[in-house]
Structure formats: C-alpha cells, structure tokens
Image (cartoon, rainbow, N blue to C red; front, side, top):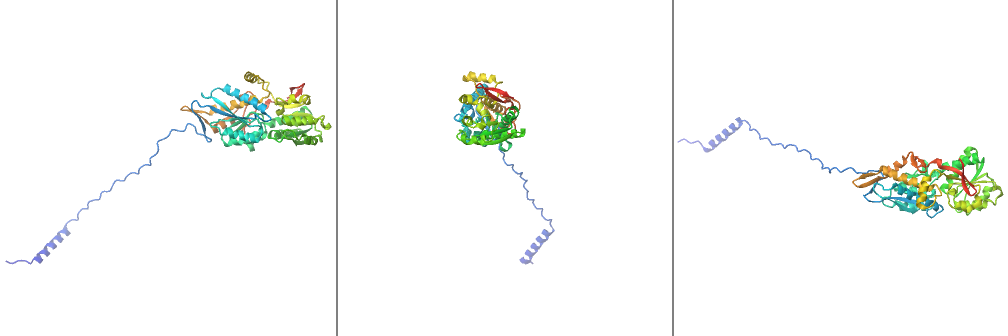
Length: 421
C-alpha cells in the first residue's frame, strides 16, 4: 500500500487553513459601549431664609413685648444752670406722661448729670451710650457740654436733641455731627437781635462785650458784633472773663477806656454779678447801658440777688406768653410756675423724638424695632411740627428752633417787661 509521508500531510493542512482564512470576510468588531454623559450636579443651596424685619446702616434696636423703651437725659443738675436743668427735667417727664405707651410699652427715663462743662458732657454721654436699647438722649443744658457729648452720640449711632444749646458753632455745616439736633433758637438769631436793638432802638453806635470763653458766650458776642458792624456800629473791644467773675477788676479798665454806649454781657450769674457790682467804680461807664443775654433772664435768682443794681437793665429772652396750656400742666404737676421757656422746649424735644421713633418703628412677631439711621433721617425731615414753642422745622444740620420766640425785656420796678420788638 502506498502512504504519503506525515510531514507532507501536515504542511498541506496548514496551507489549506491559511487559504481559507484569507478568502473569508473579516470579522465584524464588537462595538465598545460608550457611557451616557452624566449631567453636572448642582451645588446644594441653603433653604431660603425669611427677610430680616429691620435692616438699617446703623442697626436696629429691638424691644420684645413688655420691654421698656429708655430715653437718656443729660442735663445740668449741679453746675451754674442747675435750676434750668431741674425745670427741663419737669418738661421731659410731662412729655413722657402725655405720650403714654409706645406700642404697648412703657417709656422710661435714665438721668445723667452733664453739669455745664465739656468733661461733664462727655461723661454723661458715655454713660448713657452704654445703656442697652437707648433710643435717644435729651440734652445737654449747656453748649459747652454738647461740644463733647455730641461726638459720643454720633459714634454710638444715637440721636440727641437739646432744649437749650444755643451756640451757633454746634450746627455750622463744617461742624455738623450726625445725630445732633436742637429745638433752642440759634445764637446767631439772638446776637442779631442784640445788635438790632442796640443800634435801632437805643441809637447806640459803640458797643463792648464780655465773654466767659464758653461756646455759648463766645458765639453770642461774635454774632452781635458782626451784625452791629453791618448796621454801621462798632464793637470797640471784646473782653474775656473767668466764669466765676474772679478777674472782673482786670477786665473792666480795658472797657472803661473806650466809654462804650452799650456793654453786652452774654454771661452766667457769677460773672455778671461781678461785672455789674464793679462797674459803678468807673466814671466812664456810668452812662453805659447794660444788656444781658437769655442766660441771665432765665436765671431764677439773678434779678432778685442784684436788686436795684439791675433796674433799667435790658435782657434778651424767650416768650412764654402763648404757652399757658403748658404752664398750667407744669403747675398741676409740680406746684410752681416754670421760670424759663426751657422746660417747654424740653417737652418739645422729647415729643419730637418719640413721634419720630414711632413713625419709623417696625412691629414684627411681637418685637418692636427702631432703625437708628431711619430715626435720624426722620428727625431731620421735620417740617411744620406743631410744638408748644411754635412751629418747628429742622435744617439739614439740626437747627429746629423757632426764631420768633426771641425778644428784649427791661427791668422796670424789679420786673421784666417786654420792650422790643
């Protein structure tokens, strides 16, 4: 039997397989599955919070239900104008009583003694500013105390309304401190009245002045001299005396040398007493007419302590004739008649603050909010407010007083009598 060799057979089989593979169509590749794109996941956001009930650049004061609403009072209770401070306290207390509850909450008063000095004003304002929830301050009595107190008030985001600060420097645009206002007449107005009365009513062409160096005294004498010069008169000399009058003997010779027709005294009791008592020693001052400012007319003791020495003397003052309603209210509560307009101005300052606070207040879920900047803005927008002292309108720098309350009085038989205008 004839057999092929095994090696040849194996070779033929390999060759046949290669030929078949070359002639067969290529295999279809299995596609690799492409994953679907996954959308990006959003950053989780916190759930929306309810809007704040009170938003204000200076913050908001919050009073829960039943919480008292405090007002600070910074007045002179120990210095040269302490009697005025006491009467102004009465006006503030009456105003709070008349106002009643504030959204169901009691209004309370916190008192500090600002004396009549820069140090006293600063200390009183700092103590009050540290009180929790204070909506504002009524004060100060003296302009000198306000110089420092108002800086504290501004920095604390508070408001302060003065019943008796009259120094013009306090509301000059270049000296403006946000949050400070006053309802007392600006001394620019009082100084102009002094000059116009001296020049037009008395026919004087020369005037001398004595200041105690305080903002009140300095600005009053400057305003009087400026207007007097505009009218055609001359301020021949402007002197400075210690507030207690201790150096009157050094000041009066300088004035006597000019023999002025009018001597204007924007002083407090002690200094004015010293000047008037020593004036009689100078022959060239015998015919000089004395004209005092409202600080002396408002003093409950100055006239009685000087007796006949001030007979015929003139004073600037503020009218209270149209305010019998307030005077009656004061007598009913304290058993005496207010001696100055400043208790009434304290009433107006307090009601102005309370009404403005009520205007801007927000009640939310039992909590009362008072926004601080909104309160400042509301006070400066005051226009035609019907106060006991007359119609009040505030200037952009905080002057809210009524010029029409000023006039001149003369001592006749120991009593002040209105003579101008």
